[in-house]
Length: 457
Image 1: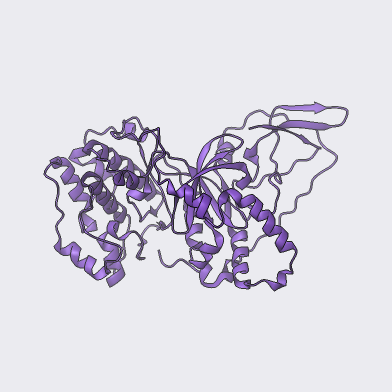
Image 2: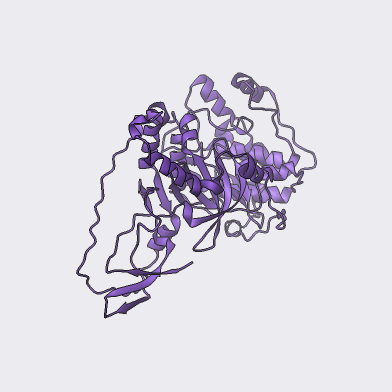
């Protein structure tokens, strides 16, 4: 994990932990070096210094990770387990094909998700550690949670006890309360987006359709997964009105908790249901609660599933005031000192095994062959006149993404926030390495609808 590197009397400043455009895939992996490690040995005869060179101070890229296996996929992105070569830490790597994002007009959503993830960190979120890019893909490296998502466990017919669901509600309440403090509405709380760690604690993931609203603002877009979307989202879409706010995530939490307990959702809603019919459904259908549930749990679910958002439980204080949760020691919950009732089997990988087969056999551009493929593409590109591009529009969009993509390194950010330690400064050098920083101008406006705003929040 540590290499000894000889430095010939030169130092180069590192890029910031979060810097726009710095993820240039044309740069070699060791293009950026930071200040030397305190353990320096000097040689008076040649003035050459050796120091421990940490990958931490490099622009992290694809080559710094070993790809282990595919574990999931979304509409335009896939997820695999990776190991960082220097630290041997395991992560989940989500990669999104640039061309597919452009074709589906998803570039802004990806950029917005990155913007949000780079600013937040919480014990019950799936946190971003690194973001970078190459010619083909955009990458997000996040916490690896090996317990699987709650949708997977529902499909495996796991029977969640009331105590288990109670803890999930508490952990997600802390996560949603934190997001509210950061002005973020998640808009897609559902079993598919709740991942369990190996101990069984819940973590919220997937901020692809999340939005940021400031004080006094309201969201208006029709966004989410229909069976989990709050009534006011549909009302806002159909009738205009004042929009919606943080309350929608708490409705989704109530729907999810009900589903975990009963095995099905309280409303029979599907993705193809017209919005008009859903508005009528909420006004005519009453939720049926199981007689086997405790009265306190039913009372809590009723407050989470209140159609009128003004009367709905929609903040941590509301949850904490619930009679059902009056005995909860919230400091123990936040420190993960409350043992979950359901612990995933550590002897198996909790995901669909076909993801790995698809990546290895069916995928036309598999990740494990990326390095060889990029080298071949680069050779091909160098052999033809760039003026003969078959798709100038696509190329302009790709160049805009290349320039505006924001790289991120949370590990480096954390190191920069640590108290400074004593270090050994090398003697003054006679040769100075001059660095020129080119000012970068956003070119996203070249991409037309692809790079236009993702619509109102």
